[in-house]
Length: 452
Image (cartoon, rainbow, N blue to C red; front, side, top):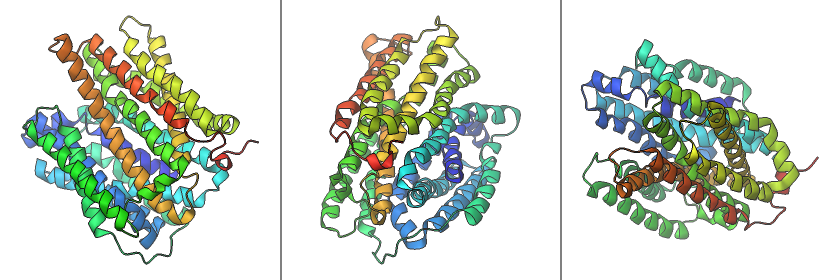
């Protein structure tokens, strides 16, 4: 629960400021469109520093790194709340991202190294829940604080959570570390940093008309070039920062490939659903937040059920059957209309949140099914990095699909038909995760969820 609370704090912070950006723009005397850099700088910082989290945890101890990461994240929050200009805010958001990059992967590493393998499914179910709640709670909370108090308070709410987290980690969490004298892979760090940073920057800015059209394309090209450079470097290095040899494990390979396809589709959901409710249905920001909250309610219902389902049916059958229904419910969001009874809309979102959360829980456990304790840090770094990239890609895909539908339909503003086409397409993208999940044996990772 301590690790889950830190994860909740990071996920909530990532979304809570979105509602406050127009007010912050007025305070900084900036154009609202320029405030997007406050979000992008944080994501870039995450992408650059997550790959180093595993090595740092092994060298200095996961408990110490996790505690320091919470402190850095909290300090960054305080400084963001005190920022007087947009450049200051960007610098402090980068500092915050450095803390977040260490906080979540290292927190997960603490769990993986302390929890018995047979209990990993139940633990990941607890861990997944706040990750899904945070993005839903963030926007309405940010709007409430900004409207009735001050936008600076959206950062200050992290302070008490951070202080309590540091104390709980100090007294309640056992330290785990690996004896290693492996030197830090500086070349890999630079190449992976350029690759992740450029790709994330390109994906975040493409199609937004914030920069010249060639800039996002050039950034994505640079990112792909750096990816190729890192791949060549990793093949020759004895201990690369991101160890792609882990892909030889069938369960890790399926969790990455199938999970990435699933995340692209699901990653578009937080972008498309609020937009559809507010622009096509005419709902207010508060009404939209109250409706989308049903997704997190589904995740809460999933928590006590996930362990029983996976133990009863196994990972492969769960990912295949649940993946099919998850894709159908994601596509079904495109059939929602303002004339639908509110209860029916809630039912679709509730069921979708339940199934998606179950799918994420299964992926997050399966990834470590064949990984030894000595390589757990490397597996956490690689898996967390790929998670970040493909969830961000999901937002980009959702925005691109909406733009394409508007272009071909000749709509100046997005209409319900445009959202319908986008949801159906991302549902089909998520469905491609199903055949990829079928590539592993039926009894894969059975020791992680033994039948009782």
